[in-house]
Length: 55
Image (cartoon, rainbow, N blue to C red):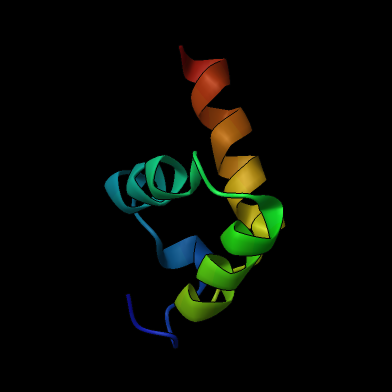
């Protein structure tokens, strides 16, 4: 992921991959991952909630 890419530009597959990647991480570790990717933890949590609504 490019750091210039905004959270709105992430496609469904990229969002799902980020959710899976962070599933086993602590909040601090997930936050660090998010910072590296140019997103915030609340984006990840929102995307996760959106996926569960679709199921």
